Amino acid sequence: MSSEKTPLVSPRPQAAPSSGCLDIFRGIFFSSSASNTEEPSYNEKDAQAYNEMVGSASNDALRQGMEQLTISSNSSDLNLSDLWEKDEFAKAVHQAIDAVSAELREISLKLHNDPELSWEEYRAHALLTEYLEKKGFQVQRNACDLDTAFIARAGNSDKVTIGICSEYDALPGIGHACGHNLIAISGVAAAIGLKAAIEKFSLQAEVKLFGTPAEETSGGKVSMLNKGAFENVDLCMMLHGANADVVFPAFLALDTVEVEYFGKASHASASPWDGINALDAAILAYTNIGMMRQQMHPSQRVHGIIKEGGQAPNIIPDYTRSSYTVRAPKFAEVEVLKKRVERIFKSAATATGCTVKLTWGVPYKDILTNDPLARKFEHYMNEQGVKYATKEQQQSKLSGSTDMGNLTYALPGIHPMFNILNLRGEDDMSMGLHTKEFAHASAQYTGHIATLRAAKSLAMTGVDCILDAELLKQVKHQFESTK
Ligand SMILES: [Zn+2]
Ligand SMILES: [Zn+2]
Image (cartoon, rainbow, N blue to C red; front, side, top):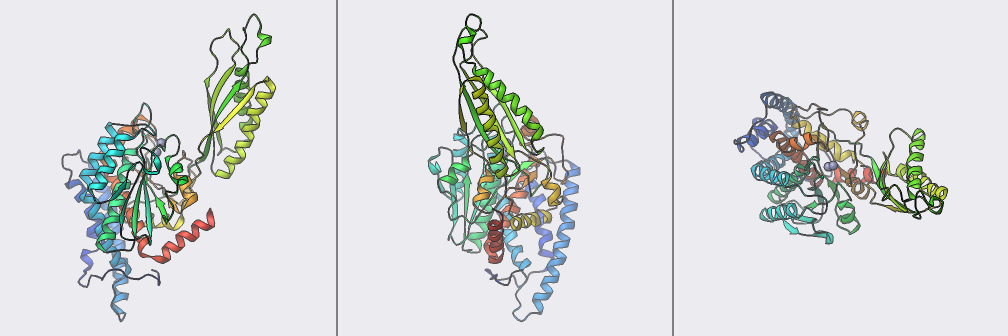
């Protein structure tokens, strides 16, 4: 508890231990399921395990609360403890999110049944912005001159601004196989929870929900960042469904490149000596990258395909186009790796007499997980029964890449992954992201409950940053020291 913190609401004088965390956190499971009786419920094992874990976690919190209550009662001003105050905030956040569970479920399924690709998320944009407006947010559609981006804000002051991101683009052929329908509602839920706390307790703060398009292809967040959307935002957080619970995900930084070789066409039999073979250049590059892999660190990746390799076998190809992705755990490593592959692309042109054109894409940086924010989120997930492996164990699993990484280089942030496959906190490696199976799981009710559970923790993390000036200071200090 920070000495700088000023209590912003009156403590509850009649607060009795039995109305503390235990009831609130036990309520999560029952209230959510009760409001959606038409849904196929989770299996018995899930329900039992979840309630047992929630029960024991809350008992710890309750005990802690009683200790703090005793200390507070002995003091002269009789202020109730931090925890009791937060208890009220948690109640407001949890109740606000539970109250919209059925509506969010409907939105999630609509998005799932109607997947839209990057930059084409028009119906998702309309659905989400309309809903947020109905819920009392000020909504800016087509934010940053991007057709499918939005910014929704609520609150009464920009003293502290908490940013949350939603994503809603899908994948070609396999729809919401990355579960962005769940990410969309996780952001909406967290924003609704924060809005409820800000308004109920007249907190000097605002929440901004960023609707960020095209995460799967070309970084809507990067475009929004470059256009200043995140200026004056103190921190930004988002959630991502997965097959495990992870607060410290190891996302790789990446960059992409289109490689075009320009040669000269000629008859492949009558006058091959007159030609300059652009396919030879593409093949040389592909092969030399294969050779380079032996000298690459195992955590780095270079992978590519030839998209256009010529028109006909009897014509020396005068043009080829390949596409490569370069990844490494840290963005600085990607910069080094880029120089190595650039040498290969250029040398293949020299060797064949072609010219080469390299077009680099939008780089995705790795995630700089903000430690104080992550620990807060972890704490609130623990209270809801979710346990985590150590930070080192979590970071040892390499993952994909995300444009959220760029935001975490620009302002403090976290990108926790939450398990949508079961509520018991058990890793389930039977399926991964970007598979048909994961697309199916993203529409199941278990995933919905897991999403709201994580959104509650994210909202509470935001509430803590509003209330606790010392925490916000730590968050910013840690950001400055790691970027
Ligand atoms: Zn994805
Ligand atoms: Zn994703």
